Amino acid sequence: MTVCTGNICRSAMAEVVLRERFDAAGLGEQVSVCSRGVSDEERGNPVDRRARAVLVAHGYPGGDGHTARQVTAAELDQCDLVLAMTAAHARVVRRMAGDAPVVMYRRFDPAAPQCGDRDDPRLDIDDPWYGGPRDFEVCLAQVEAGADEVVAHVRELLTGQ
Image (cartoon, rainbow, N blue to C red; front, top):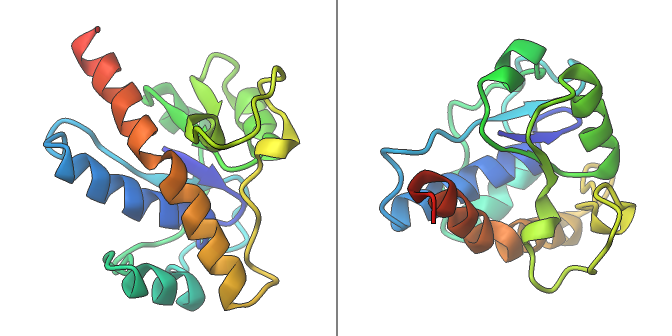
């Protein structure tokens, strides 16, 4: 599960990218990828049109059929990995389900700052909502930069190696 604020930009984009990467790695049938928001302010809305445009421009599906949803404690209990887009999102998820396996998404980006604090804000994926097309490009690049390592991590979880 990927988690951001409203589930229409960052986490929705990460869901699309990860689903594609898991499929390409031959794990699409074994891994279920979903996304949620910590807020219900966007509940029921589709992927932001700007996020959709950037995804499509980079060869991804546009997130058709996506409906923004707020994360629940019950859903967290079912997750093997929760990827928070920011330190604030990670803290909210941990308050909801203290034993949820929460990791900041950019921990999987080899080029991201190496931080000792598990919820270091230097690892936040920037919110493109208030920006322009360039901000959505940056967001997608941050998501893509960690995607292959997320896949490798999940493969290790599945195989125990």
